[in-house]
Length: 343
Image 1 (cartoon, rainbow, N blue to C red):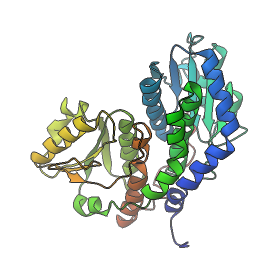
Image 2: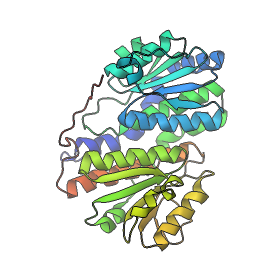
Image 3: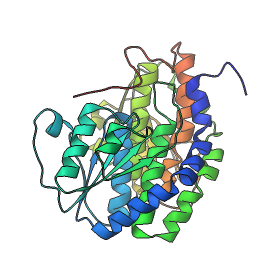
């Protein structure tokens, strides 16, 4: 292994191993929490998270709604930590995500949810921790130490944990198999080359990241990583929502990256990407069906929910290299720190 690699690059390369470590080391915790959800049979769920963890929560939200048909809503942690409000959550469940497990507002909201009667599951990279103590069940995402400020393997493992939890809850053998296969798919995805995107971006100062369904969570994470590692303005939109106003800013060679998975939304994402390319935008998409947009390489996982998750690995590799090429240190972005504790 090269000794001059950034921590971020090393942690990206570790994602396949980290995912396998999670599935092996936290199997008992996942099974217990999944059984508890099955017995609770919640009418609804809430998620509690911020930053990359909130993007992971969005991915899990779509997975639950598509698989179980139960509505999932993101709650603002400040409801508990700042406003002191108590919500009626006794018929539901909550998923709280925090790598450090100690952000005061996330912990406060998880504790409030548990006290209100919700079945609360914490996904955390730190056990023991306040978030674990505040929740009914705690799952160690087993990502291992993450030194780079920009989260990569902890983001992926949070979603893998959420999908494994979901598969245990509904006892879905197809989803269980798809989750078990993820480390192997990640091994291939982490080696994909997106340098063609870097060559075309040039001196661009702003771009859009698009997606639908679970892929919208990936677009949101990608936009955040551009900001964190490269001080580059990036905004994430639904591939449908972008047409309701934001498209007005898409001029000739304005960069647009569309994250498309092999699911029911791929066709609509393709249509939007191709239409923007036809208007002169610098449009890229992770689909082989593109007619005018540039195609980015991707790995097919064989399952419509896990497929979107594999898209983030080649992007991580791209953005780490892009950050260094622009003279930044992706391990230590200016004005950011690894653990952000908000009230």
